[in-house]
Length: 298
Image: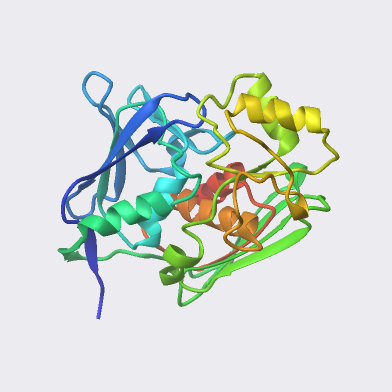
């Protein structure tokens, strides 16, 4: 028996700041009609231009996945999209009154919780699913990325990350079926290395960063003076390195939280295929650029 399409019962709004712009932004999920999939609407721009969630609308993957259409852009889309896919919603309008989806805590959980709070509504149309029936692959030799998609009775994802870092080492994560997303992957936050954070701050590229929305990995010796500078920069009383080279800004939800977050990103970026996906994705050292290119292949 085929599944029916689903949307949400009523609108729900979440508010936060954009990680890169630092601007306050409101995002509202709204019910959408059958066969709609996901579309962003920039309500702060005259005419409220619509941006389809489509791999061929991606214009930047340097610090998240940015879409552009009809003269409008929307950045950092992946965590909100992962929430929609993870909850198996088919038709949702995403209104945003700024250029960037709010970063919240760096995970999908705030979006998942908002969507669950309004409940879901079954629609009359049958759910259309892209069922993979051949083996597809994508490689990005310059970044040592390898991705493979093979037929599977479920939407499955296997991720391996290796950052040549003694702190993170090699990590694996696996989603066996999409129902696991909400509990086991939704709460997993974005992460960055301290040297990346310093560079972003230096170039004023994370105006909305406050150490509450990312796991910071310390991959080298760092002086107390430098830690004090970071504390002052992010308005914290004290910043220190915990065991395993993680700043004391967060407690890890899972030992392999970075790998699980990379899997979360794949779930969000594969919404760009344009419909629910059934197949097994195997990814070694994935990133937004490779995710998007592979979505285009599919």
